[in-house]
Length: 364
Image (tube, rainbow, N blue to C red; front, side, top):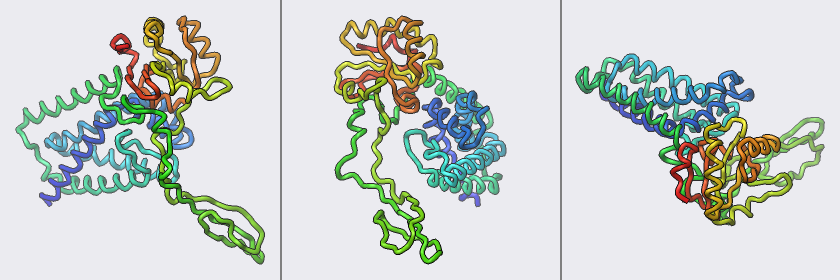
């Protein structure tokens, strides 16, 4: 039992630190995932949506810290039972998502590793078993250092986690795992290769034959049945190839201008997923920056999901001299974790990205 407990301790501690750090690298992204869970069509806890970022930071810092606590043996009873409570909650959440098909990606490892809801659930089940081993072998979870060094390491891990979370919120994620990272070409990631795997679908046809309803399963072809057609249900067996970028677009009121702007050199996108929720201090900085960029030959556009009235209002209030185009809110949130945020493109390739706090540091 002693050796099994030590193995479980190492696996759980390392996995919690890795999982927590990946989310701590992008707490804003994890808060968007929490908002999805809190929505009316999932957990129906919309009163928590305004607190999603606060909850996000608390959860990911706690996750990293518990992993460190477990490895160094700090307050074993508190640590192990806290891990148990957290994994029970996560297991319920991933089961709920998988069984009711509410959330397609749990966000367990942020954008670094995408897991299906069922993969997330079984990962949590394995973790639950490992943590239960720790519960039963709690007497074997002992500090690896004396009391003072253990306490100092525990405190430093908490302070470092808080500082790192604050730093990436005030700037941008230290590591960008998304499809819009610097160096990546947006149009290329929207393409589906000719040799890409196709989705595999299963069709269940229902016919009324001799007064009884009977089902016939095919891969798409219409079954040769002498009976009255009732209906058909489609089930995805294999997803096939899904491009990294699916919903990106730049649209005016009456046309799609995505290709037009993706062919441009020296394009600056001012991303504001929701104009009414944009940080005022950030919007104030846009005027000087965009005018400087235009003088240096850059084409500047805004990208938002807000309506025409909001677009005209922000231009008037802050004397902005560039036009805003439409894009899906979720896509803009994915492009840059800042509202407003700056993205510099050259023929569709991301050259640079910046939080509004760092606009003065952008090299044009």
